[in-house]
Length: 471
Image 1 (cartoon, helix red, strand yellow):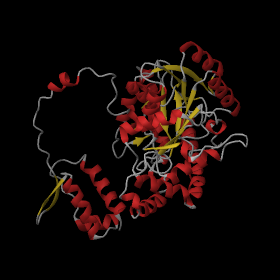
Image 2 (cartoon, rainbow, N blue to C red; image 1 turned 90 degrees about the vertical axis):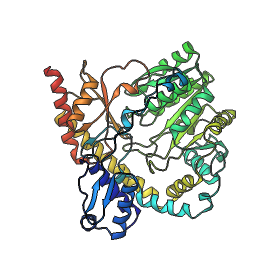
Image 3 (cartoon, helix red, strand yellow; image 1 turned 120 degrees about the vertical axis):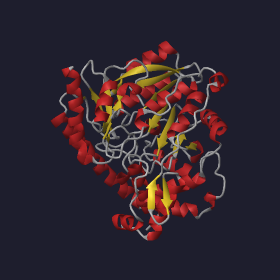
């Protein structure tokens, strides 16, 4: 049995312990071996882990029991308020999409795909190989491993027309996940107090990063086909902004993909204003019905700052992404990132590169497309059958989410609470709006675990809506 077997036992026992009373007896080693088909060594390692975490205690000759936690001593931390002063901006400690759920809950709130959708075999093999190389013991170059830089550049260059010069490895900065680079890009390109155009709704993490960077957001309403080019042009003229953050491909949360014509028009507007388009291509590997069409592939004059992440398609544990930009702007972003993080783990970079250059990567991508389509369609069918009060404006051609409009007057806070009380975890849509919400929306992720429970989930959602209407 390998480490993943040990971790499975630990994870499942931790879930049980979270609801078990202090003093409850844990299954014996023999019972655990039978239940998980595990060896004595694997079970012993799992129990050692739980003991080290302070969750269980062993009583020789009697058994292992859930440990009774001692009451924490009350402490006065009020002095910290004076020491820290007023915050520059109030940021959430944990976003709604990142909160933990009970083991038996139906989780449609998370922003990550389920483990069974990931290339697990490729990831494990890549990590094992990377651990045996020099990258496990040496510092990575500031801009990233040259081989990984070259891979990111080649991926984008493959989509470039013949009359556009493709990017090179020198144009690439490797990041520890796209979120880690967002604040740096906003600080380096826009600056505190300066305006930044942004689609509304848009990715909550970008809104959060903008607040952290002190950037002033200028919302652009986003229709079923993306932002109206006239609105973008007007916003540039009125605000004096020099950058526009957008997700032209399978936007989070709406799933919208800009048409080639719309992308061409907006890129032309950005050029006319001497501005930057910050293109967040987070879902490049999550296509279903169409293929990704990165606008950065059509720009060699330095107007597009392109962000590409592997976190959702490779593994959330391998937080590797890249910024591709041409000209002095990349140096500014590199300088900001260097002040914050110095460099990205070479071990993770090597593993990520190993995964995406294996022959099995393309096979995995084809399989993922089919699995995402099946899950998306199942959730759509379940909503149509069981949740008539939820309106789906458009079925996304890629990504991980459905964006649902609910009846006017819906109390989203109450809806989230009522659904959770019935075993369904959802994410209210307010956090995806950089200004006032355009209405009551929720985002549902169709790539989580237990898709067979989608019909149950949609019945719970409609029941919660019915309760509000009844009151």
